[in-house]
Image (cartoon, rainbow, N blue to C red; front, side):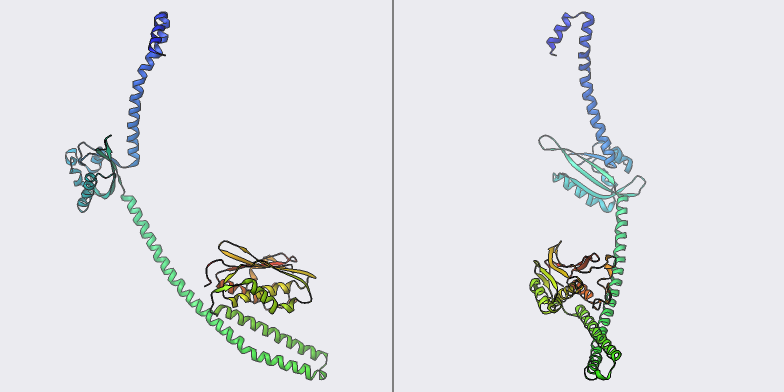
Length: 422
């Protein structure tokens, strides 16, 4: 409503009606200035409340960095009067060893027209105790960019620093403890490595020395069966056959032990390995006879190139494929799938078969030495998968298996996709 409109309404209305029209206008005129005053008071109250929660105190100086009016919180903390703190007198409350550095930093900020001032030093409390404080300040600028005054806050950080120091000492203690544990762990590891090397050397020596007597047992048993079979009855021939079979089984076990020992001791090469060619070679040269006379489909998928020791990786494929062929033997029609998938920073190779499978409750025993999950109906020494695990581990990889009884098994081994074997 415009003033002219209001005047005309007042002029034409009756006295009681005029009061009704004028009352809202008068209230609005009176409320305007009061609202502005209240907003100003509110902003100041907000500033003071923010200062209380943001720091232990607020300080203010003129453009030259001099104190010109009393700072109540500073006075309450230091015990300085306005006369004592006026100008540069406030700096007398700083610790003598910090005063020069603190004052130079402050003057440099003021005279250098810095946009921010920050400093930490010891400040004497009114009881004479020095407390570590942190000062923050900024220049208050006029419209033309000149500095009108400096405004800042300060906080007592003594407890915070003490807690930080305690935390530092605690971390230092933990590091020392970890260092002692690491040294002990290294010593134990070295001792364990020496023991393992000694055991492997012992196993290699014993296995090698057993070959000669086993060859003799097998040879003389064969001579008896070939040249003197007529002088033996059926039981005698059966017993000699058991002796020969046992000698052959022991020979295979020795070969497995020697292979396991070499897999752990042999110096590794780092070279590009064509996995497709390697698998084809193993199947053609090592396992062709085991797969003949059967309905057995072998599918070889895409196998990315690996990096490692080709001789050792050959043993991995040999043992996994030999197992797949062996455990699919009871099935009239069997299938073996060889493939690979890309993993997180690794290539996962697998051999999947449709054989007899195994119970996953015993999967943790698969890759252990001399562990067998099946009976004597399947030949084996219980060392093949242990060899696989050792070789893959030396290449920085991992092995695992999945299966269901009667539904086949899948054996996986993962090798790093990019870095060289170590």
